[in-house]
Image 1 (cartoon, rainbow over the protein chains, first blue to last red):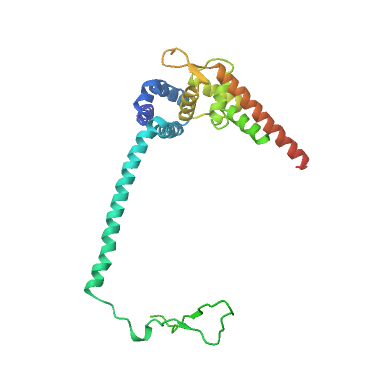
Image 2 (cartoon, rainbow over the protein chains, first blue to last red):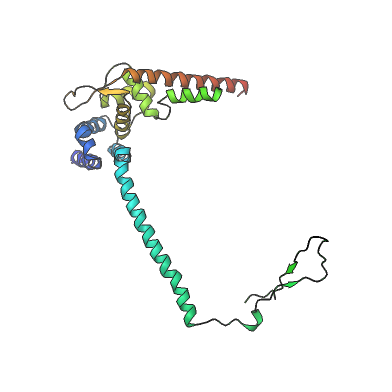
Length: 139
Length: 114
């Protein structure tokens, strides 16, 4: 019972490998797993090793190109969606501004910059000294 | 010049970034052709490291792509591999490099009085 379950587990894990790999190593890999389990290696650790190996196998250059192409298509799709969403959100405040205009409160009108008093620019170096005067309260 | 020399050495040592599993497999195959199960057992006896089967096949494929090992005709379902001449040369270069690093490390430990 446990043996058949283990064999099914290993079989399922080996199916994670690319077909090319399975044709080459599949039978030997299943036999190797059976031998290692017979020697006392836990089936879970063998299965995990094959899972990690399958992931590495898919990421090797041959398959990497295919995965890279899929990743590029997904990235391009995500970018297009992002651009569309960006355009939508950028037009929404403009519409909102055209229909209702926010009135600034009297007490929080921004102060206009004015020259500071009591400061003399250095001779020969004309410079504008600007002091920003605000009321200091949050609006 | 010294930097160039180090670069040349790194270029020759193709196993520098191949991983420990690849080096252990080459060391095991240096004593004769073996299939997967025999490799795992031999490496376990040799250095006490039990290679996972997924790691083993990944390393075997990588070494074969590099031309450092080659498969022999299948014996039933088992595929034995043997080390090639470039594989033996690469292993020698790598072991020399490891030996140099090891010697330098021991010397520094000695000088540091640790």
